[in-house]
Image (cartoon, rainbow, N blue to C red; front, side, top):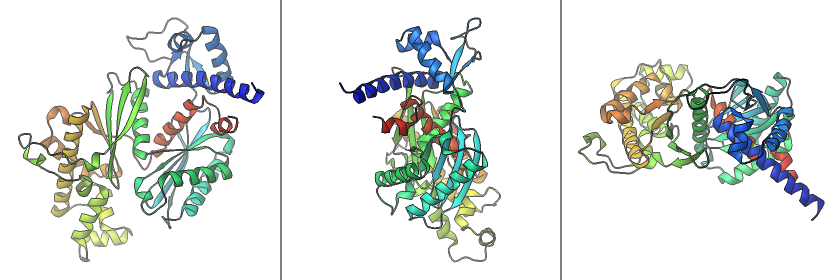
Length: 416
C-alpha cells in the first residue's frame, strides 16, 4: 500500500471519530468522557487521546456546567465537554431577489458584524460575487481577523433568485469556486427555511425547553410559501430534515370540518408574498390620490411593499379582506399538512409576520378556523429572517464542522 493511501486511510478514520464526537456534543450539548466512550463504543483511553487533541486545537472545551435535570444528574467534580463557540468564525450570506445580507458570527450565531446591500443587477452573478466578497473583507478588517480565522461560509439563496438565472447546481459551483479562489474559504449552501429551522431547534435545545417537540413543521412565507419538516431520528440521535411542498398543497378538505376549508387550489397562488403583492398592486394601480400612494412615494417603495411590511401603515377594508383571505388559505395548508405529517409544533418564518397588521389577521383566522389543539401548536419564530439570518448560516456551517471532524474542509478535500 502506498504511503499516500495509508495517510488517507488514517485521516479518514481520525476524521470519522472526531465527527462522531462532535455530532454527539451537538445533539447532547454536554457529555462526559465516560458517557462518550459508552455511546460511541470506543475505549476511554482512545476518547482521552482524541479529545485532548481537539481541546488543544480549541475545537472543544471542558466545562463543569451542566443543565441539571432528573434524567442526568452530574456527579461530584464531573467534567463535561462542549463545542467551543469561538473555535472559528462563520460567514453567513443570504441572497434574496434584490438584497444581499452578509455577516460574521461565531459557530453559535453570535454576531460580530453585518452588512446589507441592494442589488442593482439581479441577473449578474459576477456583480453578486463582488458584492459578497467586498462585504466579507470589510467585516474581517473591522474585527482584525483574516480568512484563516473563518471555518466556512454558509450561503442561503432564496428560490426566487434562480428565476432567469442559471441552473441551481451550476450557480452553486461557480459561487463556491470564486469564494475559494479569492478568499480561501469553503462555501456550503442551504435553503433559507432549512437553515432557520435548524437554528430554531438549536434555540430550543440551548434553552433546555423540556418536552420540546420531536416533529417540527417550519413554514416560510416569502416569494413562495415553502416548508421544512424535521423529525428526530432516535436510532441516529439526529434530526432528519425534508422539504414539504406546502405552497402547492391541493388537498380538498371536507365541509364537515369547516366551510372555510372548502377550497381547492394552490396556496402559493393566493397567499405567498409574491401573490399578495400582485393583488395589492392591482387594487391601487393608477390611483394616485390615496394616502397610501403618497406615503409609498415618500418612502420610495411600492404600495404593496408598504402594506405588507410596514406595521405603521393603517390598512383599509380592502387590504384587510386580502389579508383575511390569505390567512384562510394558509389555514387550509396548515390543516392539511398537520393531518398528513402529524406535527407537534408548527413554526412560521418571514418578514410579513413581523407586520402586526398581518399577524393579527393571521392569528384571528387560524384561531377561528383551526381546531383548538392544532391552533395551540402554531407560533411565529423568534428568529427574524432579515436580522438574524446568520443563525441559519451558522447552523449550516456547524454541519460542515461535524462532517469534517473540525478540520478545514478545504484541507480535507486537498488531501484525499
